[in-house]
Image (cartoon, rainbow, N blue to C red; front, side, top):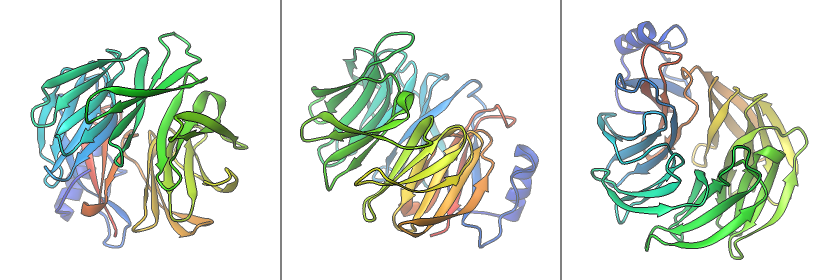
Length: 341
């Protein structure tokens, strides 16, 4: 996801490079590709999640199979570095004040704390299990890390609560599930929502008690993976991987408000409260929706992202970043979209 100029010549060049799905954008398009950063050295990478540092103008991206953290300039899209002592990085969190990056390293069963400036290792925190999904609480600066039990077919997981201030584990939340995804926080109620994917349910965690206190069974929910939250309207958004479907839920009761089709293979989702838009990134493309009111939404864009299934929105730049492998394109790259404010 990246930056500034959008020239028709660039669009034509990108069409030639990436295929017919990329086209010259008209000025009124709500989401338009403005730049692709080529990543020719990443031949077998599977991109996962992100951390954004507005203070230092950096974007961090996990590249699982390439065994690296890749760093980009937020404003120019320049690829700054690729490295870090990581094996299979997944979720990231950043303590901006300390410039320390926290990496859920599933291949090494640890959280790696890296210096944000050059990615050297500061500390390794061993985890009993396989780290993957995570959430970050900016209020407490705690990193909530999901680790499934070390088993070929796990049935239990633990959410480890790690302080990014003193680099110590301060609590654990056990959950009977081997597939937890997308931890999302409601700061007003101090609840955390989590997709319990192997049971097609949504878990509600009391963050004051560090305990799972409730689960919601949602009719039709399957392979629920990405999640986003509208605090003002008390709406929780959850997307199924297959079939592609967006669920709009009442975040107080779990009741289904509406459902909409979306691209299959969803792995990330963002709700932008400024523009009242939802972005679901999936292996089959990016789907964007406009919120008409708390109960009604309509699709405004569906874009081929060349297999890019994860994304991050940077509202202050009005830019959405989507990395993709070389599976559906000649080479891997970081696509930067301008979202209409």
